Image 1: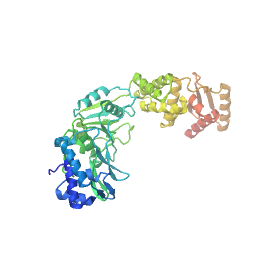
Image 2 (image 1 turned 45 degrees about the horizontal axis):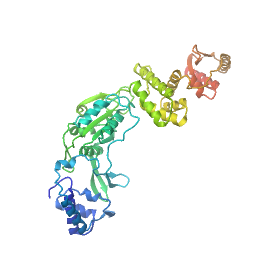
Image 3 (image 1 turned 120 degrees about the vertical axis):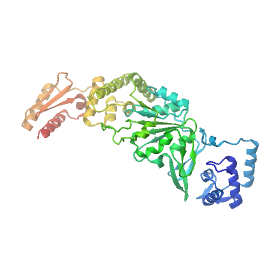
Image 4 (image 1 turned 90 degrees about the vertical axis):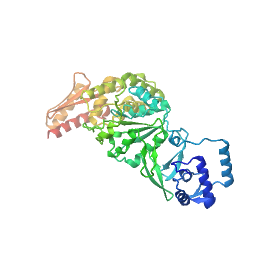
Length: 461
């Protein structure tokens, strides 16, 4: 019998028949492994991972000889053609594959496809069309996609595969990702050591698209993929098997940086990747945020899916995000609003039914100063968002200033600015603006002004 990495159906039947002759109808996993080793065969995963034949811990009940002969005869009647060795690694949507269930520590069969689901709120833009052409050609052409967080890099790859019916295997890279996570390792199952193939080998065998997500968080361990990125077969030094990629296999990497590190400190942990690794990607794509017309359509679809009819809110969110991004490009602000965060706001609005509350909750991840500035900017875009939030009259502000001046024994001025939209608090050689957003959030305006003066006093000291 030829030594192959996989067993054909005929070889499986012959192996089981020989096992029955040697040990009888019931065998242990140790007997199976010893018998395979004695015959010079690879580990018979088809049997060790067959839950239907498993009757206990490390025990298997084989089919009877009569059933086996019946199945063998049936196979002969179909006059099945011998399968070429190269075909053993080709992709098949309904083909059975086995992985390790890390909770039960047992091998399980997977018959489901890795083709992503189509997202009805997705709108194509940017590199979508070109990526679709590349993946549809099934040419091996590694691609590195970089861009700021939340602009749809990963989603684009998923949805292109969904539209093409291509299988996608996604791996999230971290600084702890090593060769065993990518290529595979050995797992202890029922007291026996068996080979667990990693996502890279699985993608190669199935002719799938391998997505390396957050690639710039990886280390030199990624160099184990250099040969794979050249389109060459992978030699498994553990088993001696040479694995050829099935037609259609490709590698797409996504990252927030170009693999040169992050000098601005926005993406803590992003590493400087090895130049030899980066050089193996045929092209690098710089993904931008979608244009306002596309982003408006994305939000519109998300609103419709949530059952929200508020075109005005959609328009104002898009304008608001666009102004912030332009300010970010000019260096006026250090943060920006991603497309993903706009979708978060849409979902929050569906839950809480209040524009400002939805925005405020989704901005809470930023520092207080940035959060207040972004909220205040939104009130400029959407004048109706705050509802009735009136600032105190000038005479009331004067009274508050006089009282605080006496308390702190220092000159305190509190007044509205010329736009009648902001309160200015001046004391202890400092000046602070209090916006309508801050007034709305505060339970007591006088307490808010007192806290501001107190902070001025502390900073002066």
